[in-house]
Length: 151
Image (cartoon, rainbow, N blue to C red; front, side, top):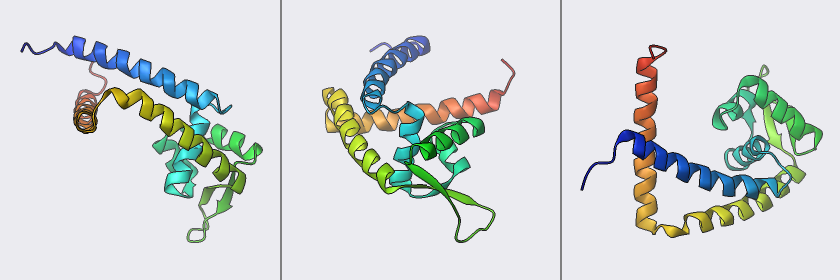
């Protein structure tokens, strides 16, 4: 079998990613949330209370964007900032009861949509795809960091 060119591999990955992303975006928009708000709530649901900057890193938001997202969610009564019990300088973002209810329900629905999207793959194919995408992502990050701004 002929090895697909890097550009062809990227094109197929890009198209597949956009198609899956469209389903994810529609699923999240039905909840009347934007992607960043959903991401923040989901991280807090699965990781527990975290400092704002840590949440931002996990959902790939800049410092300004994560602050805006947390402010927006706080105004909606879905999260709250509390002083850390172990570090007086730190403030942690916590889900409120209302926020927890919303994201638990939302995440269950979103997970069902994503399950349907990937149902074309067997369990073995999914595991292989995940392993390969991790490998590709790590290599791309390493290469990007090594090259810096030289290109």
